[in-house]
Length: 114
Length: 110
Image 1 (cartoon, rainbow over the protein chains, first blue to last red):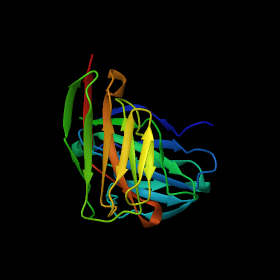
Image 2 (tube, rainbow over the protein chains, first blue to last red; image 1 turned 180 degrees about the vertical axis):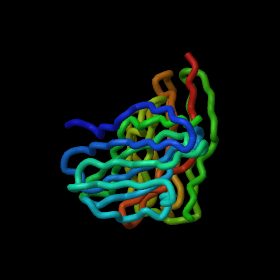
Image 3 (cartoon, each protein chain N blue to C red; image 1 turned 180 degrees about the horizontal axis):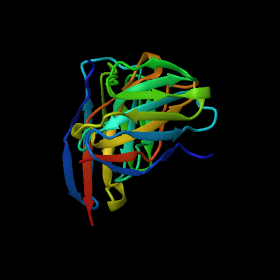
Image 4 (tube, each protein chain N blue to C red; image 1 turned 90 degrees about the horizontal axis):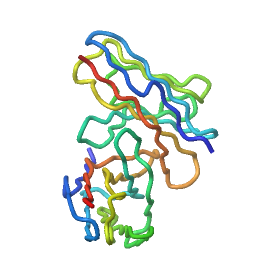
């Protein structure tokens, strides 16, 4: 079974530029999550999708961050414009509806904003 | 905000030693998960515990969920360099969301 795929793996941009990240979850997983992990900290949930609907985006800085999951499969996370404090690893995870909710993570995208 | 505190934050030990890391909260969770994360990779699930007092073993790793489902511990016996990594606990409740602790960075020296 293929795991969660993310791209790109690394991205360096200047502040005020835009960037987009892509995630392909495990086949059949209805729930998809985007997390932000700042160095030395645990992942922080940004947004949760159930199929193509948003379940929770309460911690998403909506003035600059946006995410979509068209057709309930792949998802993109966009930052526009980026700030220095957005430098972090952006992790995508997916889970299925059954069970206590184990999440399976992709390798992440390391973003550096200069 | 439901917080999970992990201790210690950093741990450096010699190969063969035993260690315990802790995960504590003031909130009750319906489940608690432990993940290990290596540099450049996403967290990988090690175990899920759902019942208060539950103990699970995974080779040299022993996981325990507190009776009140507010805390958990991870014990590693005879640590090996391959155990090096960031250990994260994550508490789950309704809506299938997890709150992650800040992690324990473990280094096992050969």
